[in-house]
Structure formats: C-alpha cells, structure tokens
Length: 295
Image 1: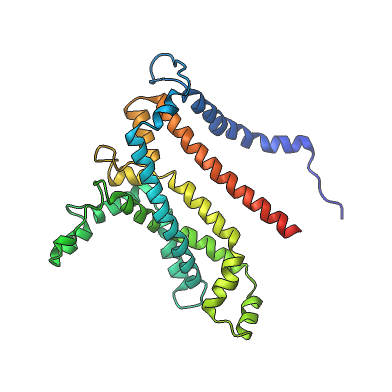
Image 2: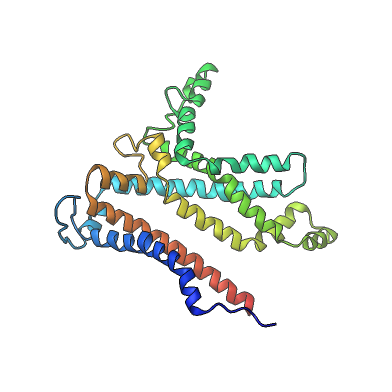
C-alpha cells in the first residue's frame, strides 16, 4: 500500500509554531542565562564581563554548599523511597480487589495538587509549634518526641523529602503500573507451573523486565528534585538564614532578593548542567540497551 507522504513545505508549516515557541521560550533564555553567568550584572546598569568568577565563588559560598547538601539529602531519601514505595504500590494496584479504581484515584490525587497548596497543607501538619504531628504527641504526653520538622537545620530536608514522596508516589506508581501491564501473563503462568512463588517471580520476571521503566523513574525523580521550589518556600521560606534552602530556592533568593543576577545565573547553569548530564546518561543507557536488544 502507498503510504501518505507529507510534503516538506507542509512539514515546515506544521512544525514552525512549535519551533518558534521552543526557540523563544527555551533556547534564547538558555543562552541569555549562560551569558549573564559570566558577568557581575545586578539588574541595573550594564553587565560587565567577569570571566569565571561566579563559578569560582560557588565552591566558596557556604549557603550554596548547604543548599546543595540539602538537595542531595532530599534526592537520596525521596529517590529510594519513591522507587521502592511506588513499585510496591503498583504491584498492589495491579491486583484485582474491591475499590481498586478508587485507590488509584486517591493515590494519584496528590500529584495534581499545586505544589504551593501541598506546602500549605503540610505546613499545618509539620509546624513545630502548632502542627498536627507535634500537637498529637503533646496530647499523648510524648512531648519528648516532638521534633522541629521544619524551620530547623536538621530535619527540614527530611520533611521536604517526606512531602515530595507523598506528592509524587501516585505518579511514579502509575508509570510502574503501566510497565507491569505490558508484561505478558504467560510468563507468570509458566513460572507458577515451574513452582516459582509470586514473590520470587517479582524478582525473576517483573523487575528485570521493568529496567527501562526503573531508569525512567530514576531520571524523573532526579530532575524533579532539582525543580523543588514551592515546597521549600511554603514550608520554611528557606529559613533559618537560608539553611533549609534547596538549589532552586537559593538561586531565587540570590537573583530576585539579593539582585545578584550574574551569580544567580551561574547557579542556574550549574543546575542545568547536572540535569543535562542525567538526561544524557539516561539516553546513553537507553541507546545501548536498544542496540543489545537489536543484536
């Protein structure tokens, strides 16, 4: 059968609006950010070229290093929690039981809530003074167990990880569930006939066949952590003294509060480079696995 072919001129016309939007709102701001990262621009006056001074300052900026540490803690805690938790939830939701559809909707619901609203909700739960958790502990006479969940220098990254986990659990579980649905049921039946238990078949069949899905979730979790802003602003405002900031919230403070646009753009470029490296790593793994499968 003859396939319908789209003339080159038609392709250009169809792609032009998307390409224009892509160039104007993504490519151009990217180049502008990189350019300003090599200046001492303060938002007023002329941007003076300062070389790599802004990037050299990153290693000496204590608050930047604290925000980087907080981001890494959130990435480690939420990354492990989301991978394991969403996979287990997907396995449960893959079973047929009463209320399955309602359970899927309830687990996925937090993902569609705006992050600023999520931060507001959890602020009333985690606040060390009037928050729900500490209030319940005080009512039970367990005041010694009360923790400064947010606003302190120790537990805030853990609290942000917990909120991030709650918000993204349903999303990543849905991705895992979609991957599980693609696995032929014949494989599980054959394994059952051979005497393989259901728990063992998860390790021998499900996990190996979900490697691409696992990699995808890892990439989405990592890139998602590097975009955390609203949660930190709503929960702590970066306090005390920006010791609970993440990379993005600290960058916002540097640019829009301190008016150090050049230095803020250097932080933005740093975040961009890490995200690009992660994306490249994912594409490299996917390409290698595609070649192995084709061979």
